[in-house]
Image (cartoon, rainbow, N blue to C red):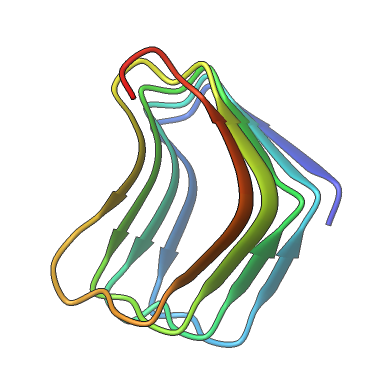
Amino acid sequence: KNIWICNFKNGIYNNGSENIFFCNIFIVGCDTGCVWDNTANANILTNFNISGCHTGMTITGSTDNMISGSSIQGCTLNGIVVRTNSTCNIFQNIYFENLNM
């Protein structure tokens, strides 16, 4: 809660965790702001801001996550990329303002 993450390859790399609550996270200037990979299931990410990254968020092989009340701004490639085997993820109240959307 209440964390700033700046200028890394991945701001958050979540691989295999379950039932974690992320709140008030600010991710700035990373290649990918947030990566949820390989069974990162049933997590909640709320009130986060991703800005100035190449890709805001990538989800691969993860299910039953909720992403809400957030903003993804100023990303140069993609806002959110949802890849194979990612089902039942909920996206609500997300503000997007990106160059390539």
